[in-house]
Length: 151
Length: 151
Image (cartoon, rainbow over all chains, first blue to last red; front, side, top):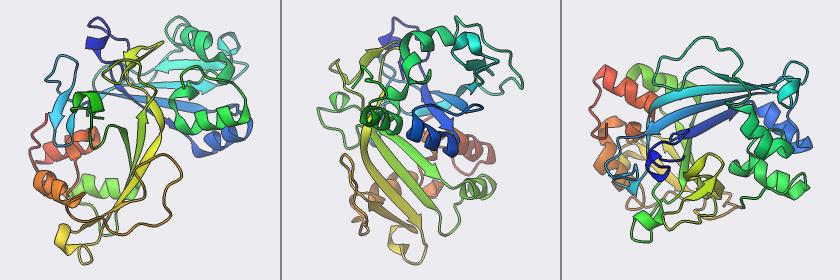
């Protein structure tokens, strides 16, 4: 979550990211360090709940911080090594980066919008930002599949 | 997520909250505004990934912000109106608020640790902070079950 105010007023993804992967595909990654063909990863975005401080935070009974607000987008990536060979085997789709309702269909996003950043930063970990997923990061580090920079 | 540095150096919950509820219990809430007897809600906490700025943020390819770090706790609440009658029908359990591994069992937490804050703030929405869950908040507002203050 990268608040606008910490990014010159405009972040590409100021929202919380909630990411969903089917259990059997997580299990396969844990075993091999690669996701199976056909794996779908869904990223759902939620805005910050009405900020009252300049940094995007607000105060609630648990303290001052950042809380989930309304839905603001949903993205999908699918692994198909043949169809998406040009982008390291993954295709990227956006069904809307805005409040509900979202689009019902989506064309593949141009490589510059999604794939290039994944390719530049996480090509070694099957195009996935495992450094932000404790379960995947622990396994990746333990198995020596890669040494992510962030920890 | 309430960073320590925004809370005088020490927040009660500086971590990301990842909350899990079985689908049939979410469906029941969406229909009635109440969770069924036996509903279990699991809250998994993850620390901020190695902060480099005083506010707890760091810089990654997506910008400056807050990213998931290591697991740091798991809590459970269970609805049983008879057993937990004194705390509005919900019992609260902590299996560790620290890095892995967690405890295998837990006794009910004293009311002052969990239940009292829920009772003081979210008694009207079945002891649950629906204002931070867009799906539950939208439904609660739409049905007029309550008018959460946060939005």
